[in-house]
Length: 138
Image (tube, rainbow, N blue to C red; front, side, top):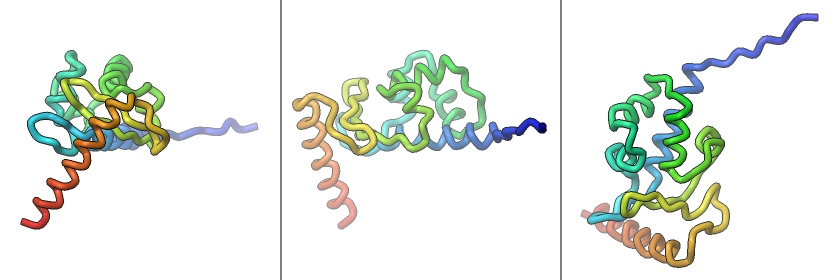
């Protein structure tokens, strides 16, 4: 009996993961002096501490093999599990404030943060939407 061969294109998987991580980073509502969608690599690097902005950029472009320890740190910084980080179908609603990422909901499910955190997110998200509409009119 012949053995089945499973062929995994490592480069393709690395690029898919890179796109997924970048999408997660850019989907976070950043609440600071300005309210904007997406956090910078600088902001993410400041949460992770031991990963440089360059390393995050290289990872997001899929040009480096990431150590498993770095994946654990990245998941922790994004405030999600490692399995969620590796799940290409995983989505979440989150915000960044005071150098911390707060997860509001995962995979469009129920709210998982506190009521106070949710109200803070909702108020700032509405502000973001209104300011985006005003910029579109200009």
